[in-house]
Length: 86
Image (cartoon, rainbow, N blue to C red; front, side):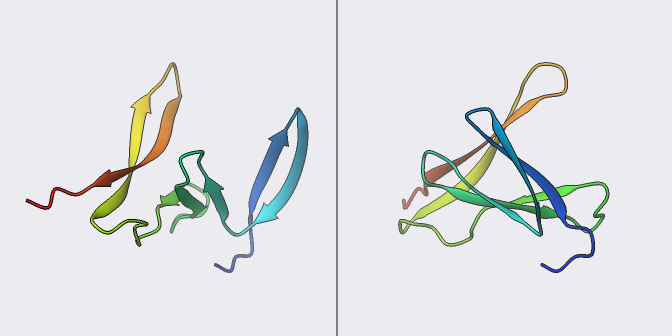
């Protein structure tokens, strides 16, 4: 993705913050599912979260799970589910 205004990302590890400019951000969760964040069509207003289409296991798919949190927060998780073959 090519852009004149890249995303600004702050990565924090052990309290040390490192900033960088990025066209997209790839995140791998502890369960091994990777997803990417990138600016949507309305670059100033939204971010798109995308899961890879190809599944690691035949008959499975990855899905986002949004759970409400307090105030203006929500939890974003990605899970892998086996599709019912019967």
